[in-house]
Amino acid sequence: MRIIGITGGVGSGKSAVLSYIANKYNCKVILADEVAHKVKEPGEKCYTRLIELLSDEILEADGTINKAKMADKIFSSEELLEKVNAIIHPAVKEYIVAIIKEEKEKGKLDYLFIEAALLIEDGYIEIVDEMWYIYASEKVRRERLRTTRHYSDEKINAIMEKQLSEEEFRQHCKVVIDNGGNLENTYQQIDRKLGDDTWQKEKNMQDN
Image (spheres, rainbow, N blue to C red):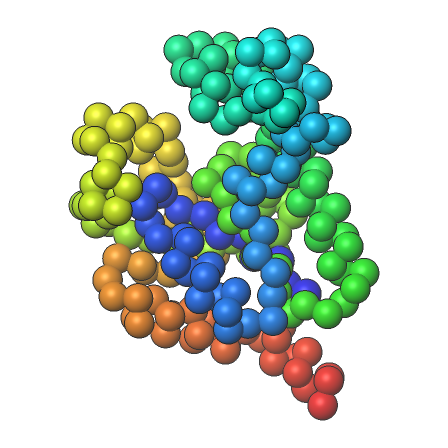
């Protein structure tokens, strides 16, 4: 099983790439955002610590953490945001490492893909076999965010300012998938890469 990290700037189209991969290849896709929600559920690792930090004002009537209420709490405080991230990010990484171990033991998958905006910053390079950078120009990404997510220019600027530059993404990623044009072209790049995967060819020869 080959472990591949998928990263890229906001609006680069990582979800479309992963949807195609999940439907075509023998793989599992782990979305760090989904894991982050899981580790905040009652009984999970981060639940009590987040309530202790942010108070029970972030809770719904059923005891679950309300994402919007939590966001309001940390919106204007960099210090609180850093403390929340220090709780959630290590727990997410630990959760993902456990999934990787489990899938390796099962031995049924060809690939396991991990998607997160902060794969590089959070040290996932140590976990994956290779990193893929999903690229689209800033102009294309801004247009996508305006039309599909209805983000304002102010919100787009605020998000992009906190993300790595194109140079930094390229520096850390072995593979670059250009997703700035039509999706068919993107799919062809993915198929060429996974079709040319030496590791996969060797595995197929062994299986035969």
